[in-house]
Length: 74
Image 1 (cartoon, rainbow, N blue to C red):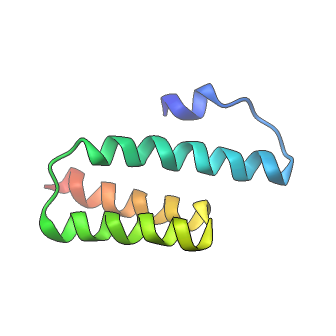
Image 2: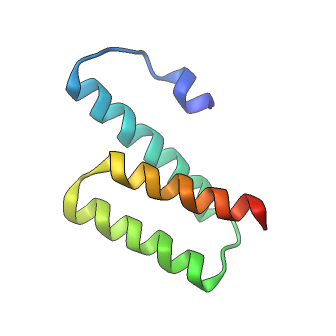
Image 3: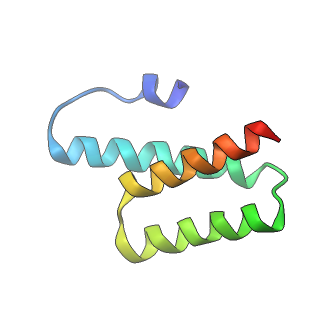
């Protein structure tokens, strides 16, 4: 949530894309500092590879949020 507050808003498509990237980078840093199961670590690596291959931060954000939801349940 802090990341969202730090980003100045705009409705330009490039600004929205940059917002997704900023959020994803921040969440990935947080996940890298957590203790993950082997399966969760593999999923995080898959997301990293997906970003590198596609540069699609919106889909990566969805996947990271799903992974984070699983982590909070445990």
